[in-house]
Image 1 (tube, rainbow, N blue to C red):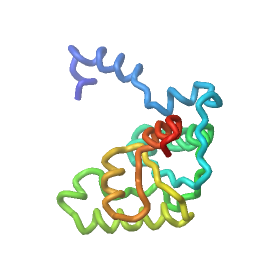
Image 2: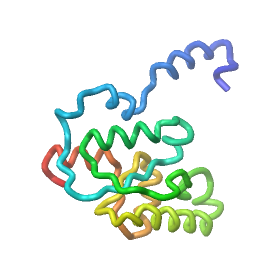
Image 3: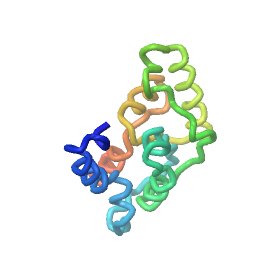
Image 4: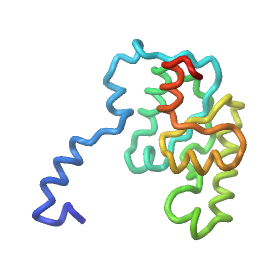
Amino acid sequence: MLRDDPVYAEKAKVVSEKALDLFEVLAKEDLEKIRINDPGKTAFHCPCTLQHAQKLGGLAQQVLVRLGFNLSPVPDAHLCCGSAGTYSITQPALSQQLRDNKMAALESGAPDRIVTANIGCQMHLDAAGRTPVRHWVEWVDDNLQGRS
């Protein structure tokens, strides 16, 4: 929309070119200085926003490993958790089925925890009441502060 508006097109382009995801920022840094002590296994839920829209899925996992995460494999990681779009409002049964499928995939490697990069997905997945789901930044912060 704004890209077609002559008043905002250039401004929108500049903002878009400068905006970076935290994974993109951290990928360029020496992460050895802030490595966390993560003795357990972690399943990473790579949200649709990160893997399909931003195309940063592989980079996200690389950064997490460099930070010290011990990632467990997640089958069908490309599938939606059911939080996105209008599923959770207009199609709650479908949303719950997608969530249950995603939780089964995330838990298949018997992780100690699940982390994600999207607060909406975090709330949706955690509502299943199974393996706790947190935002990966919270997990890093707690480990840096010694509160894991």
